[in-house]
Amino acid sequence: MRFLHTADWHLGRVLGNHSLLDDQAHVLRQFIDLAVDTKPDSIVIAGDLYDRAFPPADAVSLLDDTFHELASRCRVPILAIGGNHDSQQRLDFGARLLRHQGLHLFGAVESTGIVTVADTTFVAIPFAEPASVRSAFPEYTGQDHHSALAFLLHRFRPAQGPAVAIAHAFVAGGVESESERPLSVGTAGQVGVNAFQGYAYGALGHLHQPQTLGIPRYSGSLLKYSTSEAHQKKSVTLVTLGHGIEEFPLSPRHDLRCIEASFDQLLQAPRSDDYLYFTLTDSGLIPDVARRLQDRYPHFLGLAPRVFDSTGDDAIIPAANPQAMFASFWQYVQNEAPTAEHEAIIAELAQ
Image 1 (cartoon, rainbow, N blue to C red):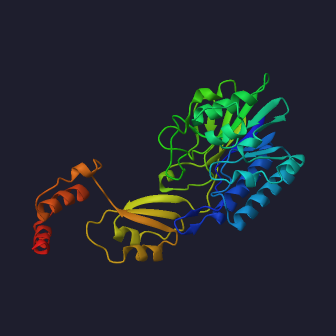
Image 2 (image 1 turned 120 degrees about the vertical axis):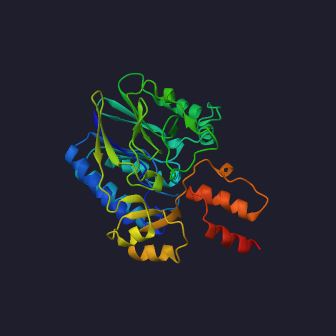
């Protein structure tokens, strides 16, 4: 059994003030071509197809076009579940009719079900919030995400033959990014790896960095959706049960990069259409700095001053007078003592 595993498309997402729809269409074309070239037995999309419950119309059109291309060119079963960003009931619309065309949508937890492809059973579980599981399955009485997902994985696991779990969850030990919406407060939203015992593979969505945690694996998101993902390599996972996985990288239309430099260095650097976040090394005030950078870099995301000390607020020592407080703050931010000129300015302002 060979299948493509992807997740976290987040169609309709905005980065800064920039719509990512064209960028998403760009990598989805690569995904469709990959599906045609690799000839998998099925295609799995593990949740968060949209970025929000009420996606813009052009995001809906992009998903519709993508499903049409995949179905007509690949002619293999496509399985997609709802994630915590999706409107799960909306994804269920037309699902019973679409299954006859090979498109299997599982939006709400009530629609959890199985699809058999050759000798392999796929158990498709949409985002399983504990309260929703209790409502749909009265025999479940738990309160946390681990017990909710473990209950569904056990309930639908076949008695024999290889099985693949499709789920949207935060498995304990996974590496997070800033762009993922928390599933709950604290650790109550985490799921233990042992919930996937008895499965040959767990096709997961939610965490945006590709990573394997034993049986379950995150394929990662299509694109970089926050500056914390700037170092990540986005890809699609080709799974061959019993023989391992292969990662196929995706090439973005515009990369997302974080750059640390002085303002003059940024003005002298070659122009770039990438999504850029800057950390400035300058110590002085630069008038109208954001606008001037935005004029040069059309996909400018933001900027911040460089902070040398990472010990937190305790590094700034409370003091009885403004001059001493300023000296402590300057040392914290610039990693050097203020000059006599700086101290004279602060003394004059304080007076």
